[in-house]
Image (cartoon, rainbow, N blue to C red; front, top):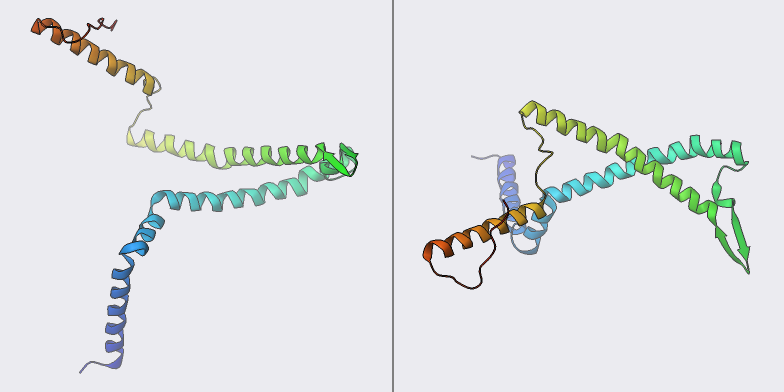
Length: 175
């Protein structure tokens, strides 16, 4: 005789199985596939890393750069500096400088804290696996041009061997 816990566990497992079957069909199934794609996970990681980098940069700006600016200009924020007011309209070059400074600091932090370590890690993993970089690999345009030259050569050879010309004759490529 089965215990009450075993019956409840079996019923729960059946319910979970039915829900999982329903969620794999239709709109829910498509949404589940969309969320589980690698690009969505990468994007979520990017958003989290972006917010983390932003908080670090804001701490650097608020605790290091703003006090340095206050020491030099007498005000901790550049938004009050270099303003022009005419007929109740204010143009603030200082606010633009502050935004540019914040952007540059975020870009520097992302480059040195995320991009450089990831590139170094990729280089190390390639070196460990024996894969070498191909710095002289042809560009997509060069590859397309090379393919077109091969096609032209094939057409030129086929017209010479058959003795018949189909359409106009293409000049032989230089390669």
